[in-house]
Amino acid sequence: MTIATAEPKQAKGKLKKVYTPQEYLALEEKAEDKHEYRNGEIVAMAGGTTNHNEIVTNLCTALKVALKGQHYRVFISDVRLWIPRYNQYTYPDVMVIAGEPIYHQGQASITNPLLIVEVLSPSPQDYDRGTKFTYYRSISQLQEYILVDQYSVKIEQFSKISQGQWLLTEYEANSENLMVESLKLPLNIVDIYDQVEFESCSP
Image (cartoon, rainbow, N blue to C red; front, top):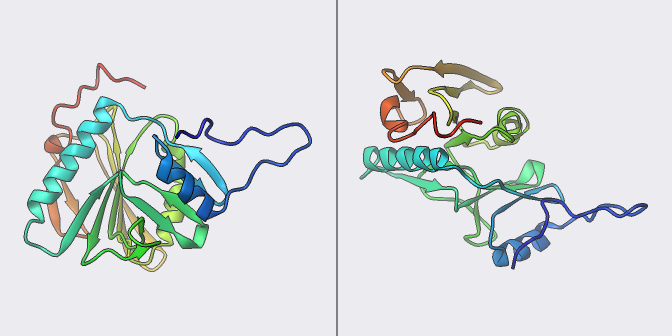
């Protein structure tokens, strides 16, 4: 089953349909593509590019290898995140959890990421930097949010330094190391962008 539109069509004089979280979960279980739930609205997620896929795979591989034997879990975008304060379900590109996952609705969604990484796409990148980051900051366990550009070497890293304070660090060179503060783990930026072809994937 697929959900035909990103948002239900609104006929003249009629209110747009508002879905409950339970209705969303029931539809999502049968849907062929992934959708976000935004406080009553169901929004289709854009398909990924090859660059997007390469970066997510590179990050996940590097994190899995570096954290092997430690009490962390690494998840990619098939795992859903529930954000209760804002009544949101979403699928971050990469999440790292310290210890065991805290689930919502059985094992359908998790609630306690330590680190979230999003690979930026042209259409939702302002949403990822702004509104979505506001939602993510409401997660008490979250200590770090990293945004990776897929069209050039550019990484924005937000590290929580105290309650209500986040430090921005920017990287724009392949020769640099990205220090993942929440894990005390250096990652080579050249490895994050391995096999990414900027010329063939312009916005």
